[in-house]
Length: 59
View 1: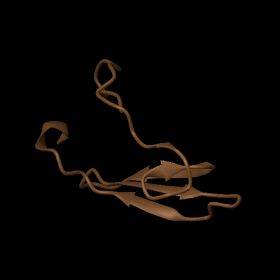
View 2: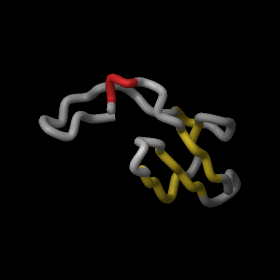
View 3: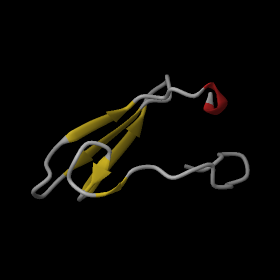
């Protein structure tokens, strides 16, 4: 994750794998107005994940 204003790294997001919170072949990513992140994967993983924003520090 990066800060939009200066591009500094805020923290990591996900890791390699096929389980919840992991990515195998991430194909698409979107962010809604509440700061939640959605990812979609292709190939064998074939699933969609929602990552809910829980920290007020990033709002």
